[in-house]
Length: 131
Image 1: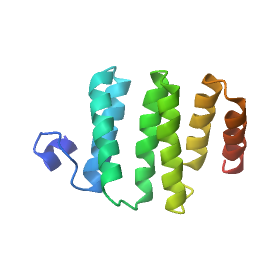
Image 2: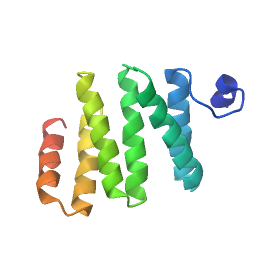
Image 3: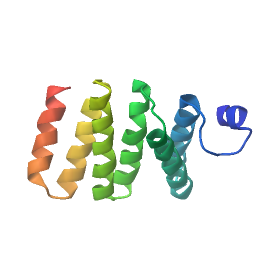
Image 4: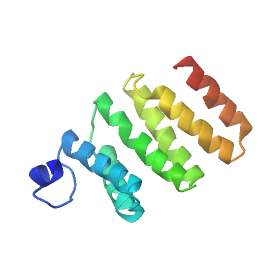
């Protein structure tokens, strides 16, 4: 409903942070409801928007994280690790701590599935530090 009010019922390139968060939320909800095709399209739109603008708000730290969780659920661990690493890099760039433990824990899952013990242990320690 909120998306319909802001974007006149069309999913298009978000024009502001609120629209970006709405699209990202809709993507996550679509995934949880089992519509992974719709979720994938919306996540890609949200990631593109996040990378296209110089958004500096901490609340946008959730975008890469939720996309990463979606990719983990699809067992696309290498892609998930790349998306999550980009999210951690963004958090560091903003000099923020918001979502760091969550990112680290998701990366632990990725590297555990990929059997990369060194990186898994690195992010497990990282997660414990910022817990």
